Length: 277
Image 1 (cartoon, rainbow, N blue to C red):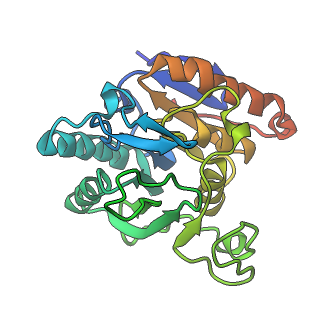
Image 2: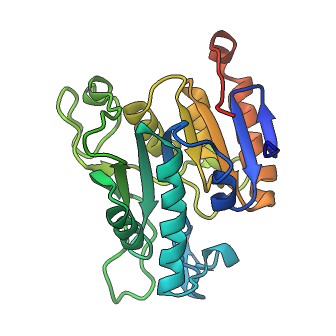
């Protein structure tokens, strides 16, 4: 029995509400071209941070609370294992995180014999200041880019990357892009339907999707949140499958953003899509 999607648009996109691991189990093996995963960072520890000049709690919800080192690692191991099953042989996986989560994800990749292609330092020029003044200000996240088999031929659109259209820290059009990316946090326009506590900027996903996927590829985001991955997938002629366990974020942010993108993307009428069932 096919799992019913929470929201669909023709054969272009599907959103599912529920547990990422359980829903991924219903996806046939080797049917996904690229996965971008922004799993819980387990940052919600009753601490405080600074946002817009104000002292605010770091708590995002029960889904972001640590269950202890062993349980957190088990969670990361299991969802990454499902990603390996459903990715095509030529597919790749992107994982974003901070030091709270990225090392557990990296260890899971290594123990499952993934091949790590790159680790990217996403530098945030406008990162929030540190309130304690007793440590360096956290101003970056790490992105891991991996494939199932070292010998597999993965997608990397070298010519697109080399054109240097992005406002990168090195500003070097015509030269190879480095692994340090300077990208600011989401702009106000991207948050017009509301704020998601872990929303990624469109510029980040634009770079990843254009560089490491092709038109008509199926892109999955198992923790899609505000659906930034879906917005950019739709914008550039990819298909999208998103999963999230928070109904309020799907209803108030993700779906409105995707509807806006669909309504304002004239290319959709000229492209044929078929999401794997």
